[in-house]
Image (cartoon, rainbow, N blue to C red; front, side, top):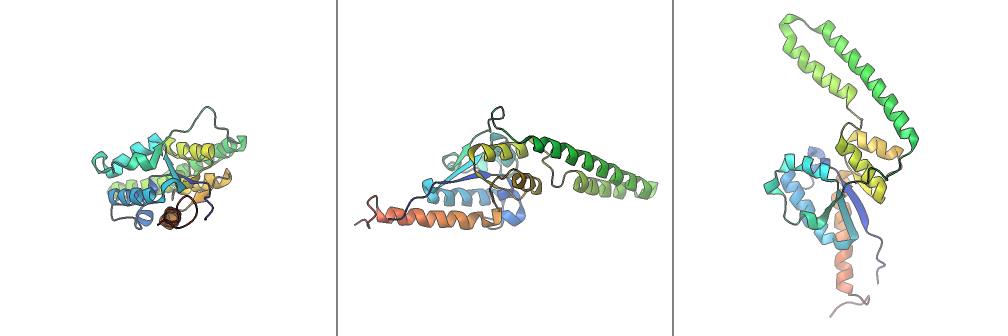
Length: 212
C-alpha cells in the first residue's frame, strides 16, 4: 500500500490566475484558469489543502467577477486570514523593509528629476507616461506594497504552507523568511501528480489491495 504523505498546504496568490504567463497552463482567461484549477484540486482530494486570505479573494473577484466564481471554490480553497497579532516574524524583516523603502524613495526622486529635465511643454503627456512607468519600476517592483501581499506572507508562515505566486516582491521576501515556494508554472504538474496518487489510493482501497 502506498504510504499517504502529509497533505501539501498551498497559499494562493491572484497571480496564479491573472498573470498571463502563469495562467496560460490553466485557461485563456482568469475565470477559465480558476475553474480549471478548482476542478483539478478537487481531484487531488485530501492530498492538497489550499488557502487564500479573504483580502486576496476580494482582489481575485475584481479579475474574474463574482458570477464567474465556481460554486465549488470554497470546498477546495479555505478562506483564512492570518493571525496578524500572533504570527511572529524576525526583527531583521522590519529593518530590511525600512532600508528597502528608503532606497526606493531615493530612486523615485531621481526618476522624477530626470523626467523634469527631459520634459517640455510640447511633450508633457509623453513625459508623464514615461515617468509613471519608470517610477513604478523604481519604487514598487520587488516590494511588499499591499496588505494582500503581507497577508499571503504571514499566512504561509503561520500554517507552514508553500506560497504560490509569481510576484517578485513576495517571492523575494518569502525566500528571506524561509517560506517554501512553488512557482505557478509548476502548480498544474504538482496537482496532477497529487490527483494521480489519489486515484491510485482509491483503486487500492483501505486495505492496500485492489478493490473488486
